[in-house]
Image 1 (spheres, rainbow, N blue to C red):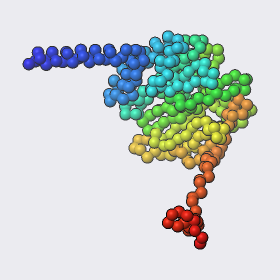
Image 2: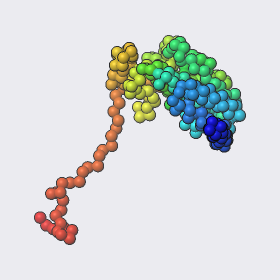
Image 3: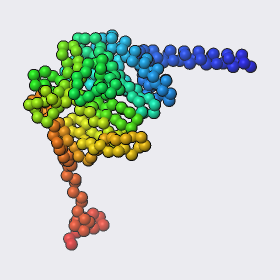
Image 4: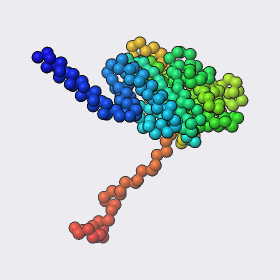
Length: 303
């Protein structure tokens, strides 16, 4: 009986291995598999294992050249951001552990013109040394999952990019990030002093990025608003969180502020009134008594 069970187990294992080998025919298929485990596995050790393999295979694919973009661009795990000229692409993704209380971020910058080798981003946000007044290299990346990129021109005429992202940070708190990505030759950097209250002193004393720490269950907005033609974000109040052990955190006050582009800098706007234009509704039909009277056959009759 035991031999029969052992034989059945070995046959099942061989069949599973055969089916997996038939399904994962390409590196992209393998990335899809590891991406699914990375995002949905119930055990953290399985997620970590999948994340390590995903990162390694992703790096190998990018090293094949710019044509590899077509292999990975539709992976559901990734956030992709490209500049207007599509000269490079910024990939980011995240790993969530401990029931969404610990987060790790991954990223690459790939040239789509084969100008430089893929640049891997190393998560530095958890070090606790990321501030609003520093510039970092990809080896010390102020990590985030970026949901938007917007190009703008610096005072010297060079191009830079606003990056809008989110960092999980901790069990109870999240961080919204507005960073600046800029390029010098084939080197990329994060953070540039372009945020402030007045243009004259920003280059010397301005912030290099904006960090908004807030409660994980609070609806917080940070993005470029085309209707207002400026960056819009919530004003946050520091309050005691409602969850045991949360401590002080950021809660939206109900008001908004912003940053307006002006000659290479982003100038703080202390108040933004967000009123959306609502198209006029179609007037309702007139009451029945105001309509022409008709007979049984639909013919108008005189009152």
